[in-house]
Image 1 (cartoon, rainbow, N blue to C red):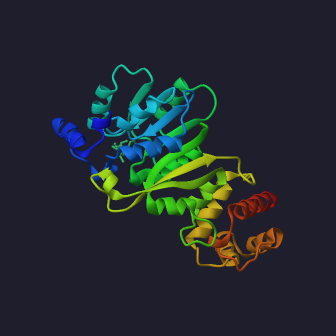
Image 2 (cartoon, protein in one colour):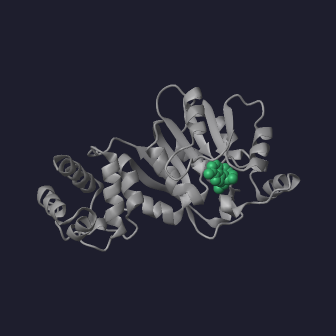
Image 3 (cartoon, rainbow, N blue to C red):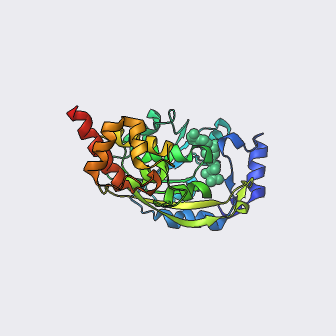
Length: 292
Ligand code: SAM
């Protein structure tokens, strides 16, 4: 495998198959042995793990993952790459490749991926490991955290800017819906920063490997749909103070009641509210809506 992790090997495989990297599909392939090792360290795989990989590429990370766990399911959208990965991994019973899109629209994981996981994995949380295509990284993370399949840990390569939004805390300018929705269900830490030179072709931005560890929410949202609507609405007007933002979304009376019952300072702006405060507000909103 070592000789396969360099630019000339990758170029020769793509060239033999009349392929070149497709920017629209986020095809920045990893060409660094040392970053592959970092991903494997971050994922802390055991022989019991089932792993979902997003974007098999030519199947190099796929095979390194399969060497260390029970089963890898890898989904690849590009038919040319899917064909190469299938040939390279032929005969491996611990790898199951799916040709298709991870996502079905912006808000769902595709049924094919869900059903395939159900077929091969019966109990316990799975892991997700991926050098994520950057154009789908935020919806992929949120949909996976909200998925019916339990995911215990995700170890994903992201654009550094997305990693900063994901790991931001209240008061930071990067803090927003992505930090809140992910922070509702998981703890996130940057495991390593990765330079553009570790990929081919080189992306224009720096990347970061992020370790996402699932946990129970601090406070459970009674109706997740209400929480989600409230967060999106408040952050659409992120410069407005809480009372104004609530008034714009739900009317003056509801805004007054929510401020009074929650005890949250009305002068706070959405970017200063913790996930727990936002859930608290959403739960009060649910109560208020039920009462009227
Ligand atoms: N795993 C390989 C590596 O590390 O070198 C490739 C990673 S590359 C950053 C992202 C891969 O995801 C590409 O192979 C791309 O074709 C695939 N991809 C892009 N969008 C996808 C989607 N919506 N569903 C599944 N795979 C996708």
